[in-house]
Image 1 (tube, rainbow, N blue to C red):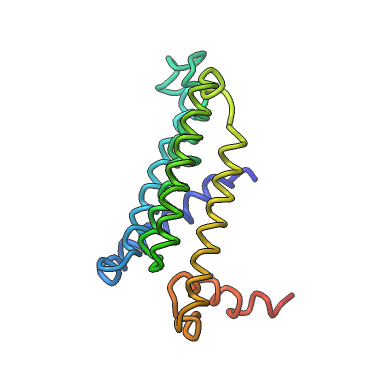
Image 2: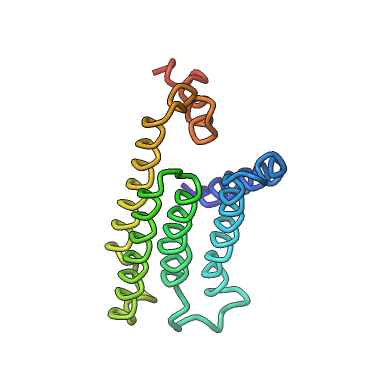
Amino acid sequence: MKYYSYVTFAVEFLAVITGLILYKKYKHAATKYFIWFLVYLTICDTLSNYVRFIRDGFLHFLHGTIFAWNYWWCTLFWKIGAIAFFIFYYRKVLKIERLRAVLKYVNIVFLIYAFGCILLNFDEYFVKSFISISIIGAIIIIICAMFYFYEVVQSNSVLSVLSLLIFTSVSQFLYGGWLLHL
């Protein structure tokens, strides 16, 4: 647990490097947005570590202020920003216009709710996480995945599902021997 954050950052950074190396292959596909999301994620995660420098570091002047914790940063850029990205990404990936339209309205409602929640509880925005935003965000990601699976099942691409980028890493993980050792 002592090195958890370093291991997590290393994995994120490795994903970014891999994505940037393979960017040319995917620059004309919706996958390019996911690569840029990985860059965004790594930058946001790195910047959220500013709290490490508050107690004894060069940001000591922030000690005792509302910025002494990074709840506000993580809420804005991860819990809201990442969900907005996933909706954007799935709207690019999905081909059924009705599903894309549903996600458009889900995004609008989610953003209104999230920012309304922050505005109504502005004092708490800097000192705690909003569990309701996290739960709704998780439900939205599940909806996006369900829409994608629905579209795959409705099309002929279900026959080549293992060759799709989204499933490639999962299938390599499962069939790469990990499950065989259970």
